[in-house]
Length: 319
Ligand SMILES: Cc1ncc(COP(=O)(O)O)c(C=O)c1O
Image 1 (cartoon, helix red, strand yellow):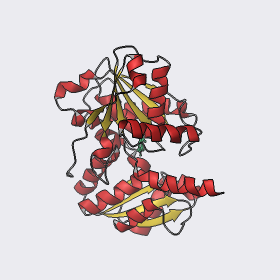
Image 2 (cartoon, rainbow, N blue to C red):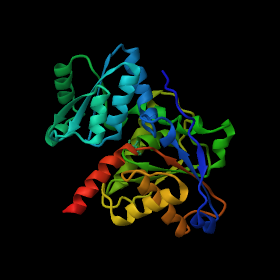
Image 3 (cartoon, helix red, strand yellow):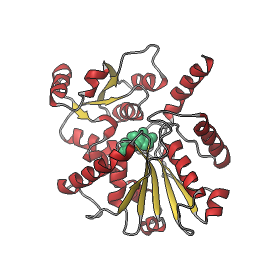
Image 4 (cartoon, protein in one colour):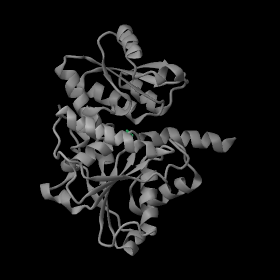
């Protein structure tokens, strides 16, 4: 099962802040892999789709918010690989559909809305049984593709991107934005000794993710799924750059994002990557990294969400 992807470039960032800190900064541009299925999304979906295909499912069902990158990518991969797709969306239907959901419908996704109370039950056997009864034989992928299949795909992110096998050793720190920590788990499982993954939770009070990642790593290693290494290398959560919580932004973040794009030609999404890039640049100013360190910042995509976010921001500024 494969899609035609552009090999994600590794782009050096020539920034005065990095130069002063004596650090080399690179971005892994997963956002450029494919117009619809990019960032960490293909990696999280790949083994879920393979399992669905192996088990002869023809319909995928998954969950997400109204601006979800995962809903967008599942709708696209479903149509590209010939699966029917159902997107279970949190909250009430709002018309006209926003750009994310319009795209999903154009790709043939059927949308179903669950009120927040019911949506919270999405991982319970009762709700899953209800969905199976309502839609028949569906292969259920959890919200965000956050399961062991998702983590398995993410073990391939760094290795797939490197021009040569040994190239990955060149980086001391791999930095990434973190929602559920599935991508982090996959990356941690793929790093070499001496390397460290630094994850920036985009949710408020993200410290709880430390336990999530421990659980994910333990479950993954116990599952017998392939892992490049059996003992994960070090990782760290930096919880100070959530900007008020999930999908919350302020003028400082918006300005940073705009300036970074202008200076370095790297567009950032406001929900995930802008917060991580902001965090890294701020840590560089604080002398958090050692001189001579080489950093690889993983651009996990999510740019489709900017259209909806910009519309919402314009609406607020009119009030
Ligand atoms: C663009 C983007 N970056 C980062 C993440 C965080 O990934 P994870 O939930 O695996 O931590 C997500 C969510 O899947 C995302 O859509």
